[in-house]
Amino acid sequence: MTELAASVFDPALDLELRREVDVPPHLVWRAWTEPDLLMKWFTPAPWRTTACELDLRPGGRFRTVMEGPAGERHDNTGCVLAVVPQQLFVFTDALGPGFRPTGSAFMTGSVSISPSGAGTLYIARALHKDPEAKKQHDDMGFHSGWGTALDQLVALMKGM
Image (cartoon, rainbow, N blue to C red):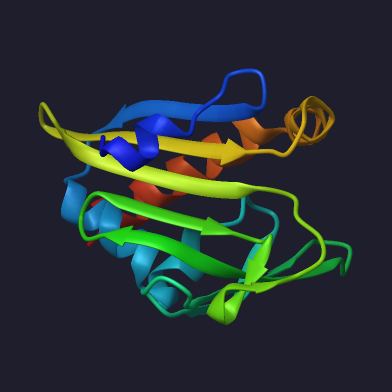
């Protein structure tokens, strides 16, 4: 894991999903950084990701539209903070494209990938502004939701 990803985690404020998956790191990276692939796995079923815009550079747009089975729709636009190809992707909703403040923030996310055995050590983190925001995200089902999405990523990329 890069120094950047390791230096910001605070267990009092943040959530982490850490797993070894049997997909090579380059395929995990593709799944996170190619919008057409990301839309196929990013949202736990029965929800769907119906749109994705991703400008893979610091300050670039990271937008997803998620739709639920009862017609719910969440259009989320944020900002890419850091990109280390094949290793680290960091994004936030606290800032929009061009590092413009959004006025609201739910989390900053990071995904760290590194070779491990026959696959990848995958570490996804959600950083929050306070313990209440962490609890809210945990209560929403962070571990089950992000875990299900990772299972979907693995299944998709094994078929590549």
